[in-house]
Length: 435
Image 1 (cartoon, rainbow, N blue to C red):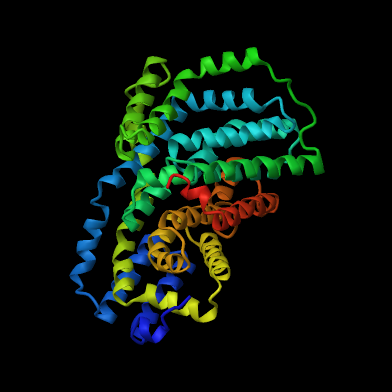
Image 2: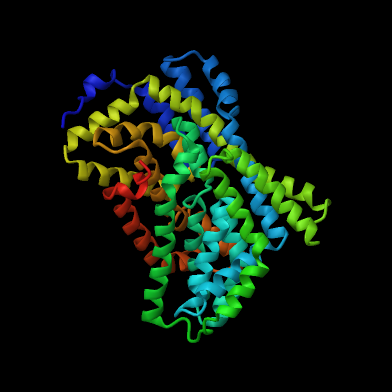
C-alpha cells in the first residue's frame, strides 16, 4: 500500500498554523467554553494563514447551521423531554424490567435495556442518564448495589444514547461528511445493540464476582403481557420513529417532528401533560441546543481552513510514514478517538476529526459508513471516562456520589465497550451488512 509523503501532501506549516492551534488547545484546557475556543482558533488560523478570505468565517457560521437535517437535533431533544414529563419513560422501564427482570441481575439488565429504549427516542446520552438514573439508581442500591456501582451502570447504559438510532451524533456526522443520515441509522443498528449487550454482559460478570443483586422476581408471561399492553403508547413512539425512517416514509427530521407531536398528544390525552408544559419543554430543549449548535457553527470554518491547508492529506502521509499495516493504522485511529473522547465532547470531535480521519480510513480500505460507525462508537467511551465523562457528572449530580468513585466502577464497562469497538473495526459486516 502506497501513501503520499508529507512533502507531497502539503506545503510546510509554520507558526501561522501551529500558533492558533496551540491557542485553541490552551483555551480548552483553561476551561473556556468549547465553542468560544474553536471560534477564536478558527478566526486566528484564517487570519494568520491567509489561505481563505476572512469572509469565509461569517459565511460558514450561517451555512453550517442552515441545514434541514440539523432541525432534527432540537426535535429529538424535545421528544425526550416530553417522554419524561409525560411519564412514558416510566412505562418503557416497566417493560424492560418485565422482560428481563426474571434473569440473574435482572434489575441491572432491565436498567440497561431501559436506557436502550430511551435511546430509541431521544438520541441523547446525558438525557438518558438523567431520566433513567432518577428512576433506577435508588432501586439498584436497595437491591444490593453500592451507590457508585449503580451510578456507573446507569452512566454506561446511557452511552447507547448516541449509538442506537436515532442519534444526534449521526445527524451531525451526516451533516459534516455529506452522508445520508437514514443510511447511518441503518448501519448503526447492530453496533448500537452490541454495545448495549456488552454493558449487560459486563454487569452479569461483575455480579458473579461481587453478588450485588441477591434476589430476583420470577418471570411471568401474564405480567409481561400486562406491562406491554399498559405501555403500548410508549412503545408506539420508537415504532413510529424507526419504522418511518427505515421504511422511507419519513426523513429523520420529519420523523423527529412526528415523534414530538405523537408524544405530546399522548401525554395530553392521558392527562400527564398540559399546554402549559410546552413552553417549559421548549425552553429546556433550547438550552441543550444552545450548547450543540454553536459548536457545529464555529467548527465548520475550522474544518474548511484545515482542508485548504491539506491537513487531512498530511495526516494520511504522516501515519503512512509510521506504518503500512492497515491493522496498526486502524488501532492508531481508535487510540486517537479514545483520547479525544476523554477530553472533548462528541460533537466538536466529530466536526473536527471526521474530515481529518476519513481519508486515513479510506486509505486502508474502510467504507465511509464503516468509518462513521467506528468513530461514533469509539467516541462513546468518552461519556464514562475522565476527565470529561459527561455521563459520570450527570449521575454524580443526581446522587452526590464522587465522580472518581463512579469512574472506578465504570472501568469494566469501558473495557467491555472497547471490545465491541475492536469487533466493529475488524468485522466490517456489522456496519455494512445492508450493502
